[in-house]
Image (cartoon, rainbow, N blue to C red; front, top):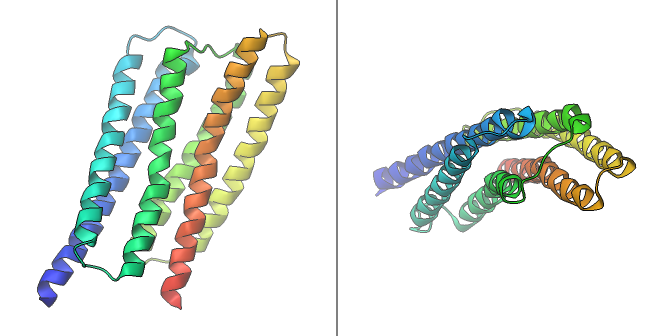
Amino acid sequence: MLKSFFKKENKIESLIYEYLDTLALSQESFLNALNACFLSGTTCEDFDFFIGQTHKYESKADDIREAINNIMYGKVLIPDARGDIMELLSCIDEIPRFYEHILYMIHDQQVILPDFLLADVKDLLRMSVECCDLLIQQTTALFKKEGGIRSYLNKIDINESHCDHAERRIIGKVFASNMDPFDKLQIRELIQLMGDISDQADSCSRLINIISMKRRV
């Protein structure tokens, strides 16, 4: 009985690492789409492919999360631990959904980024992705029972504040420009979606910090 318990617990941990690897792949596809197409200022025939890849990894992450859920609710872990893990995965799962949403918006609405916003948008995306990279590292540290949880939180919080400033700066430039009013609203929505990435990473990081503190009580 005890051997079976630890075997299932190890399986959960293995699936969580697989989930995080899949999240990283989704992020890579998302960045490939933006760098090769949207941020290059050229028409990109590979955009549909990158969207498909991002969707594939997002769907795979959902499947892994469901597998984790099924194992845990087979009474492997105590209820509080089960709840903490599923709440955390649900929080993280919003991030690849933002990736998809952003790519579909660019594709379906044929959003074109003006040259004068290019550097600022690249800065926003760079810091947003760094937040997600740190979140993956922090989540790994949590399940490996390593230290530094609070340090990751502080770094993500600093990056998230940087993203907030970048988001406001970009939107300010948009509405100070002579762009078409519809294009202004379209770009603002897109930038806000990009800003949501770091906001979500920050929320998940705070949740990890709470889970880590509960373990020490």
